[in-house]
Image: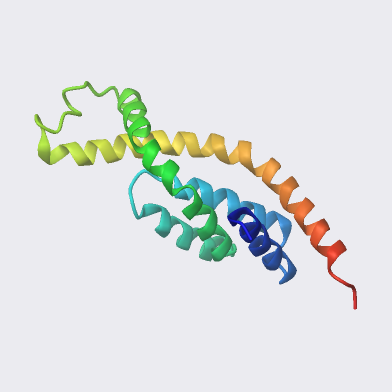
Length: 148
């Protein structure tokens, strides 16, 4: 069984245990968004906190978060550069040789601001198609499951 089918099976199993399609879709979307958080380790804390606060499925959220980890590494630099632009920072202020002590703080702040704007837009764009897909999986799983 390939990775995609394993993930779909995990979501279907969660749906069969009482997870609603809306909460499953929200778990997937937030997992992806938190997984792109540009400060390493922060996404895991966001997953844990939001699953407890919103009563979402942590395993589904965690899997979707882990799947975007390679993309997280690729997006750190673009988030930092775009955040630097949003903050109006010059290229000298983002140079580690000129300001080694404050470089990481400024870079993290810049990346975090850029990620926050991106995540709001991505959340709105991803939720509806994800909900449609989860509803489709749920219908398919109930058709395949014999009724007692």
